[in-house]
Every structure is written in structure tokens, then in C-alpha cells.
Length: 191
Length: 191
DNA sequence: TTCCTTTGTAATCGAGTGTTTAATAAGTAA
DNA sequence: TTACTTATTAAACACTCGATTACAAAGGAA
Image 1 (tube, rainbow over the protein chains, first blue to last red):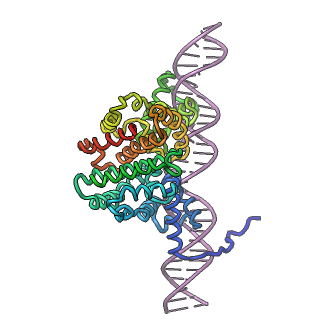
Image 2 (tube, rainbow over the protein chains, first blue to last red; image 1 turned 60 degrees about the vertical axis):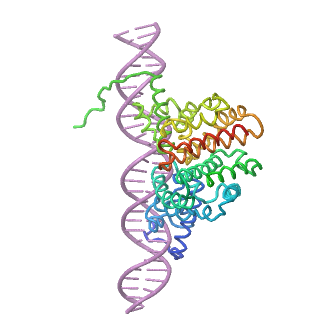
Image 3 (tube, chains in turn blue, red, green, purple; image 1 turned 135 degrees about the vertical axis):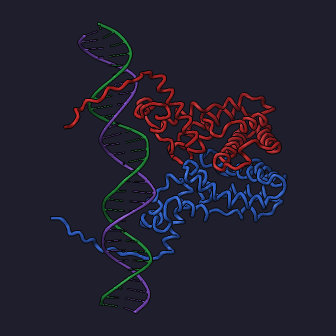
């Protein structure tokens, strides 16, 4: 005998802000560790302890959630707030002290480069909220080229660390390694 | 009245070598321009002018085709065959003269970083056929770290060019830009 | 209470994926 | 020709994914 179509009652905790925030946090983490393609809405919802349909409700689509996660993880003040004469030193230290799986922009970018939609969103956001601010902070001759060099070097080091988890860029680097990166970055700013 | 189950005759050109080669070439191009995830077996087959089922027949699986395409595109002799005293200069020139969508290893790597399976294959292959040969060619102190720096810088420049198609790393670079890259790479070798 | 809006749930849809299968054409040797 | 193997095809399978839908629970206002 079939059961009647009435569902058993379910207890529900309601809290819009908590829900939206939990989704965003989970998205930041999963997009940064797995990339856009392999971080499914079901995974993100599960990680946030939330029903998958709520992602579409509060963020419209997965792509818009990605954009929100990217924007909320993007903060160039880490670069533009340091002492200009110790720029290389401080940025190099920050790189080696950041855990590879930290929910920052660069891992999101690296792991999501293979998705054309995510790439488009990333390009637009990065150009407006990273490249332009950095260029005006850099100042001086050929600021656009120097910013490109900065982003390229840092992205490259992240890519190596994330894709080739070999020793050199994993654990504690040697003194020469740290010095080289610091000096290279400093030279870009000073040029 | 239903048609009889007999199919209309189809003309078929048979040539195993040509088929396998066409698949591999198409795979190299598509993996390098779209990445592992967005280059579907149907796309590759269509680009090769071949039936999709033949990919599984001749290469086992999409992942194994990726590995074959990666391996056949991987050639470090471009680095290890240059004059050691002009290493930076020559590699920098090669970078700026290579079209961004060329079917080389770095774009494949960059665009496929988001797929965990492709990443695993890439790591294994790159470690054996790129990192090790480069380390022995480099020689000298901390060869592993210097190779890591080389790969990181080059990968970073490619990533920037492929993800942020802005001016600085697109068209013809300025003299200072070219010089900076050449000098930076040369310093890595000489250290 | 009653009514209405908001928030959350379960189920399903439709499109896309890599892969497999059964059948047909081509090639080869007897 | 005939028989047999190889190469190729069309179709379908099994699965995942993001998105949508109809509905139930929660909360507030009257």
C-alpha cells in the first residue's frame, strides 16, 4: 500500500544573512581549492550546510556566485598598503607564509582558468579592481607593463606551487630563494 | 509503414595512421586553446574529421589522449639546446614570438589546471620529462630551486597573457620589458 | 485566530558528458 | 567468389550538472 503523498514535517532554521554568508564563504574556499568547474553547487551547498536551490535563489547562478566570491576575496590593499621601499621583501614573505589552499584570488584564478565563462568574469573584475589600482599606485614610467610583470611573477609562483607540488616552492624556501623573489619584485616597483 | 532497419550505405575511408595522427593533432590544438575540460571528445573528433568513438578505440580514454597530446607537445630541448650565455635573451624572444594559442605545453597546463585528473597527469609527466632534464642541464647549486623559478616565471607570463589579454603582454613588448625578462631569466641560470 | 510574504525543501528537468555497443563497410587472404 | 579480420559508424547508455518547479514551514501583521 503506497504511502500518502503528505511529507513528514521538517524543522527549518531561518536566517537569510547567515545563509547567504555561509554560501559565500563555502564558495570562496571551494573555488580556491578546486576551481570553478570542479566546485559544484551541490558541493558548495553541502559545505555551507544549506539546500542547493538556495544558491540560485540568493545569487542567481553559479557564475554570479563565482563573481561574488571572487570580488569578496579580492583585496589589493595587501600590495598598495606596504612600505614602498620594502615592497619586494614584504610581498615575498606574504607569498611563502600563505598556505597554498588559502581562499585567495590567485588560486581561484589559477584553478578556474580552464572555464571560459569564469575567465571572462575574472578578466573583467581583475582589470577594474586590481590592474587599474595597482597601476595608479605604481605610477612612473610604463606602469602598465610593470604591473603586468608583478602579476605574472606572482601568478607563476602560485601556479607552480599549486600544479607542481614539488619541494622548491612548497615548504620553507632557502634564503637565496626568498631573497631572489624579494629583489625581483622590488626591482619591478623601483624601475 | 515503418522503414526497414537497414541503413543507407556509407562511404568510409580507412587509414589507421592518418586517423590516429589527426586525432592527436586536433587534441594538441584544442587542449591548448580550450583546456582539458572544455575540449570535448566530440569537438576533438569533429576537428580531426573523425568519428568520436575512435578516440576511445585508439587512445583508451580522453585522459589518456590528453597524456599523449601533452607528451608529444613537450620538448625541453628548446631550453637545453640554446647557448647558455644567451639563455635569457633567447627564451625571452621565443616567448614574445610565440602566438598565445600555439599548441605548446604551457597553455595546455594553464587551461587544464582546473581538472584534478589532468593536473595529476601533468604533474607526473612534467616532473619526469621537464623538471629532471632541466635540473641536470642547469647543474650548479640549488638547481631544483632555480628550475622552479624558471618554470614559475615563464608559466606566469603565459598565464597573464592567456587570462588577462591586456596590452602589456600581448603585442610587441617594449624594449625594457624584453630586456627585463631576458635579464631575469639569465640571472636564474647564472646564479 | 487568519492572511500573506518570506525562507527553505524535495524532486525533477533538460542538456551535456565520456563511454560502450551492435552493426556495417573496407580490406585481405583463401 | 567466399570467409574472415579490421576499421568505422550511428545510436544509445549511464551519469553529472546547473537550474527550475511546486510545495511546505516560518514569521509577522491584521
